[in-house]
Structure formats: C-alpha cells, structure tokens
Length: 144
Length: 232
Image 1: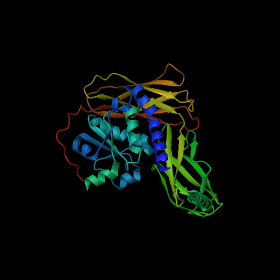
Image 2: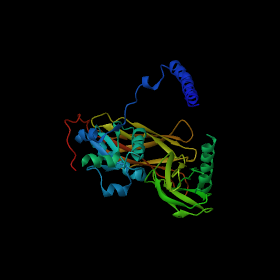
Image 3: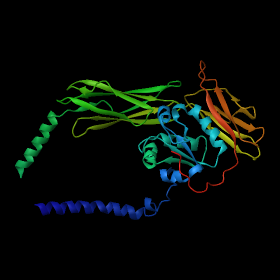
Image 4: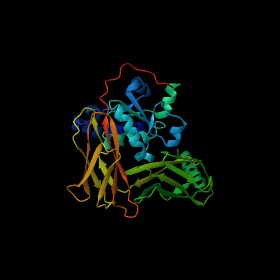
C-alpha cells in the first residue's frame, strides 16, 4: 500500500518535470540565469560609509522621525513635503553634483526611500542615486 | 485505516465549527481622491461569523504616511466593525499602494493583509522638474515639458522664477494641455539656484501650484579618496 503510494508520488513528480525541462530547453536563451543583471541601485551601510565625503545622505522618513535622530549631515526629503524639501536638497546637491546620493528610510521593509529615489531619477533626472539596504535600523546596528 | 481517517475528518469539522472567524467584506480597496484632497480614507468592514470572540493583537501599516485603527479590541460572535485606514497624500503622485497588516488571535490564520490603492488625480507633470548647468558651461536654454493630466483641464500656465538670474518663459506645446517652459540662466559662471513657481488656471477658485527647480551647479567633483568614517 505504502510502496504503491510512494510510486505514484514519484511518478507525479517525474511527470511535473517533463514540461519544465521542455520549457527550459525551448527558452534556453531567455532563462533568467543568462539574462543581463540590472545594475543595483541599493548599497550597504558599509559601502556607503566607505564613500565618506563622496556621499550625500538623504532621510526619506517622516519629519518627526528625522527630527528625533538621523545620520549626521543627512538632508530630509520625503513625499509628505516634497515641494518644500526638494529645492533645499537641490541647493545642497548643486554645490556637490558628483556626490552619490544615499537615501534611507526606517528599515528593510519600508518603501519610502525607493519612492524618493525613483522621483529623483525620473523627475529631477539625477544619477548616482542609491537606496540604503536595511535603512536607519541597519545604520544604527552597524554604527554600534 | 478507515477509523483514523473518520476521526481526522470529524476533528477538522469540529474545529471549523467552533473556531472564531473574522470575515472581511473586502481586503482591498481602490480609492480615487479628487484634486485638492489631502487624504484618502478606506473602510475595511468585517464580521465575526465564528462562534468565539476574536481579539485584535496589532494593526500595522506599511508606511508612515498611512494610519490605521480598529474601532474595538475584541469582536464578539456576530458582531460587525471596520478598520479605518487613512492615507496622507502629501506631495505624492501617481498610484499609491499601501498595506495594513491586521493580526488577530484566530488560528491558524492570525494575520490578514488589507490593501489600500489610492489612484491620485493626474494633474500637471513636469519633465524634468529640475534643470541644471555645470559652472563654466555655456548657459544655453533648457526646456521643461508640462503636460496636464485627464483630471486637470488647465488652459493657461504662468511661471515665475525666484532668482532674477534665471529667465523662464512659457509657450504652448504641440498638443492641447501641453506647454514648453524654457529656462535660461543669464550666466553660468558660479553656483546659483532658482525655484520656478508654475501656476495653472485650475481649479478656478484656488489654483494648484507646482514647482520646478533650476541650478547652476558647482564644478564636477573629483572622485572621493579613501574611506572616512562617519562622525556619529
């Protein structure tokens, strides 16, 4: 009884492989492991810190969180007050246009830094924009 | 062989019939706030259709821009209620998707993810919203394209520059609801900046104001030398 069930299970698994293998052969030039890898837009705390003065830090968290604590020298830039904060950011960026912009929000799960990065790239057409992996939480961990 | 199978089915049936169960009217909402709205509010309605009370353990949002709260801490059998999610629009654009994670003491499904999709009105898009010249570069005029979205029937645009060193003019574009904003610095020998205020004639009573920026940047930076630790 048990060996019969096991045989049937193995048969089903083997059958599932047939279309999978067929597809892999048919689309062999389009499978993901052969595709070009998109340039990463994220950066670790260690990498960003290694840029030293070449990095311009941007805090995408809400105003009250920025006011409580932030990376030294970071500029606030969030979508709650985008129209007010963007000119302030651009004024600083204009003095040092070659700097890499490192944007962070609270943690790995937050999207605020990605949204700000997207708008800086698409709307302001600024290059060298990076999102900090793990955000403020990770920065605190590495700092300590 | 048959007896354990029967007992198993019976226990599943008993557990199902006695458990607490929060039934959501819908777990995703699409909101369409109007021009001038500052927030979008979604109501996720539920009812406890089980035979035991359900307690909320936590209600978390995916973004600081969204606040969510429950009317009560515990929902009795048969009771109805709602989770209210308020999304602060701020200066956001496009379609925004935010989630609210509701944790209860229901077994085995203790967490429910509610999705709030806010389709913000298509107003005026400025591409790019920032033009700049590098110090020493020839101060040639640059163009910002302004396009009115379907929710924004503006007919006239005016633009003013906060810095008289930058000249900004508006011309009609090739299509209806399209304008070309031409920006030019009088000179580009030193770093300077200007905020461009763009005023359409819509909404008639209190026109929505948009902003673009223009700068003459400092000279290009040389690549940073070795790593230097951050102060704090």
